[in-house]
Image (cartoon, protein in one colour):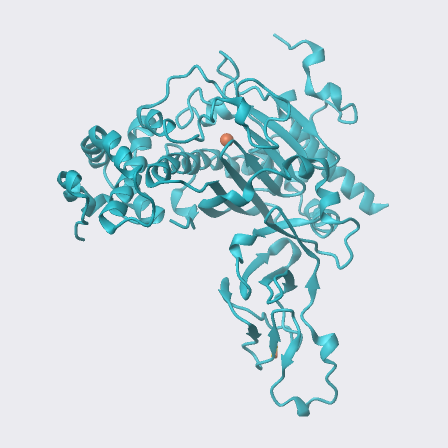
Amino acid sequence: MTTRQLPAQFAELIPLTEAWGQETETERNNARVTSEMEDVQAFYDAVMPHMENILAFLGKHDDTAAAPVRNLAFLAKSFIEASVCVELFHATTVPDGFDYRRFKIFSPT
Amino acid sequence: MNKPEQLRFADAYPELHRDPVPVEPYISPAYFEKEREAIFKKHWMNVCRIDDVPNPGDYVVKEIAVLRTSLLIVHGADGKVRAFHNVCQHRGNQLVADAKGCSKFFSCGFHGWVYDAEGKLVNVPDANEFYKLDRDSLKLKQLPCELWNGFVFFHPQAEPDQPLVEFLGELGELLKDYPFEQMRRVGAWRTKVACNWKVFIDAFQEGYHVPIVHRRSLPDVYVAGDSSSCILGGARLYDKHRALSTPAGLSRNPKPTEALVLKLSSALTRDMDNADSLMPGLNPTGIDEWAFDINVFYPNFFIDPSNGWYFSYNFWPISVNETYWEVNIHMMKPANLAIDVAQEYSKVLFRDALLEDSSTLERTQLGLESGAITHLTFSDQEIACRHLNHVVERDIRNAEV
Ligand code: FES
Ligand SMILES: [Fe+2]
């Protein structure tokens, strides 16, 4: 795997895109459920302080934006996956939940 | 403490009894056969959305196990969407093998008969070897197919006993101006679960389970007032369809990420708090702290809308204790990428809450099949489950006379 480009002011987050910058829900969720909780927590902790700025920046762009901008949105969507682990489940998967491997993701993005 | 009698939903529906409901219909293979004949062969059912077949030539194939058939839904060159049995009229081979695609013609993989998008037989290899070919009677077998608000419905009988809008009735009328067309699909999930279709539906037509099953994903989200219970704010039972409204606890402190996204968009956990701007068809009973409505179209289709998003469920029975489930969630097209990310929060949380819901289904089915429970004791909050049993039972009885 390789890193992805991000807009210049978010350059310090570029190393995170290697593990957490996938384009589809299937890939982002897969990264989450196959990670250790401490790695999910570390990713969350690294991005949370930037989230307000990230959302403010993304608010000025739409899906026709250049690749680095779209990559930032993908990273933010991975953060969303991490946020429910950290803030709600305290686990990478849903505790006592239905087997996520049987729940097939067909989401368009 | 018991509620005062006059506040019970059941008071408005004297045709429903209040006794425990037998388990038999959830576990009996013979009962399932009756449901197949009396229900699934006799009602309009939603099969997909127009955005599954947006352009002329687009098609999808849907396996409908309860009808023991495969359906081919095609967007014709004339703009009409049609439903066919996906069965070649030569010797019965399944005509289209792909789940979806785009094509002007469908060519059978056995001997090469070719049909057009309107089901006409347009080519037969070595046609002069046949004694007599009546091409008109060898068209693909078509089923009635109609669109309502972008939802594609079909009817399993050649002559439905009522038009689709009449079948959707008051509940369809209520939702007719909801802005379905302004939304885009953001999430879609599919699974097969070892439970009866009514066990499945029942799990999504009551709020009683919410504080227990969703204690992690949705803590204090769908609660009424200051309580910790999800007491439904309205129950409306129609002839066969039914609808409920879910409360929202607005005094709760949002979680950190939720607080960020709520600044940008309505969310699964909380809708826009401004009731003046509610989209048409929502919160018809006007409850104060409202989250979303649960609209159940008989026999197997839910549309649960809120102010900026809706999700839908299709429950497809396979056998008495197996059901295929299709879930879709649609949201307003985002004006920018920040809103797109905010919407992802609701989508991810919704998906994970469904994993919580689904965890109860197979355990429940096993419990029912154990024989250790013979009746289901439904509360007033579970009146929709009682209503489903009532309508199923009535359809079966009517089919027998
Ligand atoms: S079965 Fe289709 S061409 Fe023979
Ligand atoms: Fe639930």
